[in-house]
Length: 181
Image (cartoon, rainbow, N blue to C red; front, side, top):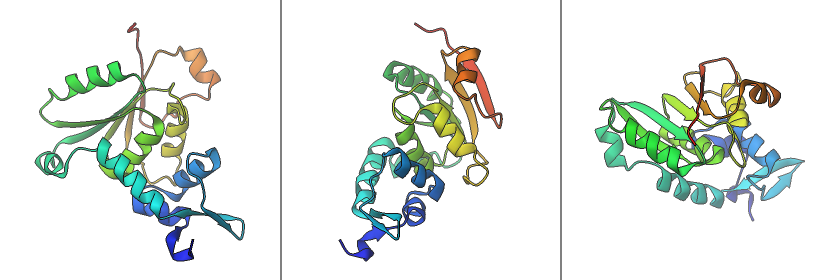
């Protein structure tokens, strides 16, 4: 593979609308595999961008839908429970000033945050892979570039378990405990 087929984490993140920090985290956690190490630094194949673009296209509203909804509040719902996603999306689509899209895990959520640019993110905390705790820590980090985001956390975890797992960052996060069985 030639060097012009490879991207640094910063270049890869810029192409996705994400910070280099998020891409570096993906590399450290094994969600993104480097194609090559150069001087001890990871390089990522450009072809991986195409794979993520296809995933993002499947998850995102069409450009026609996006242009119709240009003045609407953008809401991203992230949860691994398909029933919750369906229920929340069904309710939220009834609100005329809200455009809703969803993701089934933290990884998909981060990709959509870069592409969809939501105003509000509703997320679960317990999900496989990148969970809500990890995602919130990445997005609320001072140099993440996502200071504008408002978060609503929806979880069945009790306060003690949330604190045991690192807590919820205070910036813009609301806590709602669900009791849905």
